[in-house]
Length: 81
Image 1: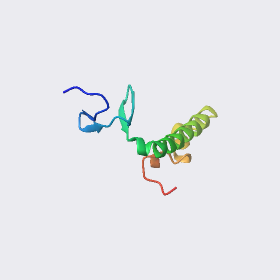
Image 2: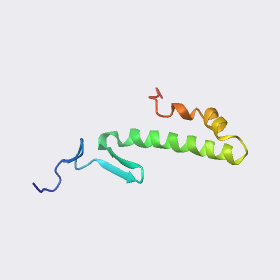
Image 3: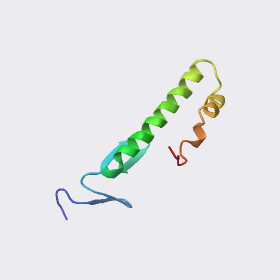
């Protein structure tokens, strides 16, 4: 069945007309439009953390220590902020 501005099923995920879809070599993510602001906030926190890790490594800090110092392991855990 064809249509315009109708939900579509992408594997196990339903994508609605206003949802945001991002893809790269690592995979695809569908963000419901009403969650876009929170997804952006989280993405910016991750980017800033990764930038700190990269800067530390470039300054001579070992990668494991840089990631520990940035609390990198906990990025995927829910935050209360």
